[in-house]
Image 1 (cartoon, rainbow, N blue to C red):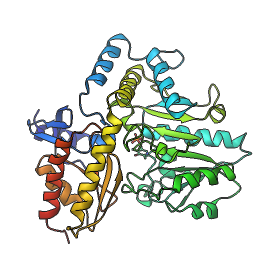
Image 2: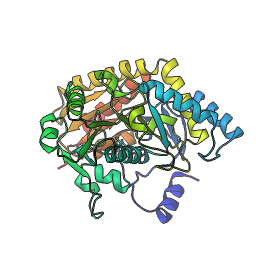
Image 3: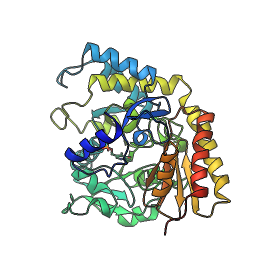
Length: 399
Ligand SMILES: *Cc1c(COP(=O)(O)O)cnc(C)c1O
């Protein structure tokens, strides 16, 4: 099928929640995607921070093929080797952790929320409330959307699930003012992704960690977007030398297959006992085999170093460009998550880049977001930057 046929058929039968761009992709290779009419695009989006090793990464493809031929599913009442290998690798990266596997980011956060409540209900002395931040994004299920501090995601779904309150991001005293007797945990993203690539002050997470310790609260970090090397470290929290009580991963974890993971300190994870929680597909052997291959690549192929150096280069180039571009308010980010804050809706820029065969993304009303593959080359970075800078120079500022 060509682009037009695929788009028409989808529109006719799919629930319209995505506001899709009029493009259908047929295949990908490395940092490039090919649409159903055969046009090639440079991908600075990675399916929203998912295909972080590029498309068709040989390690990931091989792992998926080999596992698909052996075994695709058995149920969590049995064990499989890929699941065993993945939980070992994740626990080691976290440093003495226990892992629960699900199929998406929202499910990973659901597990974190349920674990915090479960821990709060016994060890935590009957506490249940979780403080999250304004501008956050934690998922679309009813609990995770209730945890999301953005009114627009709540519209029409009220009543929201009780047990969440919001404080401004990057504002530690606000947590202190909001804390009540029933507060058991705080949940934050190390960098707000959907909120517009909002990078907090350097000491925010460190001081939040100390404050949680003093007040006997769990610190839950949602690293669904920032984890798996996106910022140049396996976990973003490694940049500040802290460790959360619970962390969640998803998006890039299995290189493009659906997966989610919650990792918790063993003394907290033990609040979950047989029967407490579960997921039919969680820990699926094919997804787990892919995830092990992704972790191999992060550890062995110099991917984290590349994300730091090429990501840093993109950030500096755009900061330099911004000095002579008055539609830009700020350029911010870390590693391969970069936001260009504009004085206007980023859509015309996104569309112009698409016309010139570069995929970028707009979020938070006025932020152009770049999520390139972690193994992007300097030449590919230059090619993408030329298209972005051209758009920022020439596309008229919308009214
Ligand atoms: C994408 C995202 C989620 C939700 O993940 P899904 O897989 O879409 O359920 C949660 N938190 C953050 C920070 C995310 O970026």
